[in-house]
Amino acid sequence: MRLKLLFYGLGMLGLTACQSASDAGQKAAEVATDTLSYIPQTAAPKPLPPPPPDYDTTEWTEVGRLDSSILIDMKYATTENFVGEKMYDCSRCFLRPEVAQAVVRVHKSLQEQGLGLKMLDCFRPRPIQWKLWEKVPDPRYVADPRKGSMHNRGAAVDLTLVNAQGEALEMGTPYDFFGPEAHPSYTNLPDSVLANRATLRDAMLREGFQPITTEWWHFSLSGKNYALSDMLWKCY
Image 1: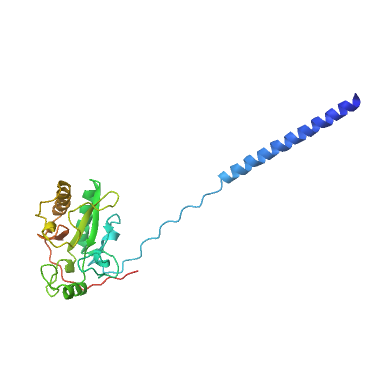
Image 2: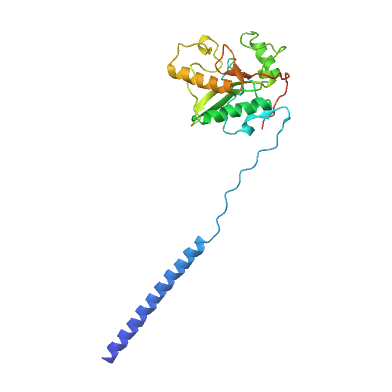
């Protein structure tokens, strides 16, 4: 009987030891978990600020710097233009400061309707105008660079509407389409297209931009005569 009691006591001691070890392990795990929860999290790196302007800011404003939510898709930096060739080394949209600020105001007014702007062409350096003229020496489509255009002065824009997802709205013709269908006065188009053109035109008119008779995408800011410029921007 004493022997049985001895074995029983030893068994209970072993059970107690195992339970203590288990409790200690659980507590250690809880401590480790608590400790991990207090490890300071590394903050996400802040985006680097844009490099300083590489142009004369008294004469020019880069639209993408002024409002990064405006889409920039300079078609002469691609082959999607009427000459089918890349004319700009890279896609940067420059305008005279007052013109750029007016574009931003148009964009902000359109954002209230769930829309926005996509820039297709902005300032066009006169050396590029010469290249266009050499390919298409027709003043109906290309301004004579000796006289220059509003694009060469940084006061004209080619642009279109996009929705909140950045998708271009239907405007009836592609950019740089030369035909009556691209004329703002042309009305043999779906109602939705006519409404899109009217939305763009009305927003531009409210900020002092004027259209031309042959291109739904082209507007220039009236009221100030800017000098022709040969400024060429850098690419990175």
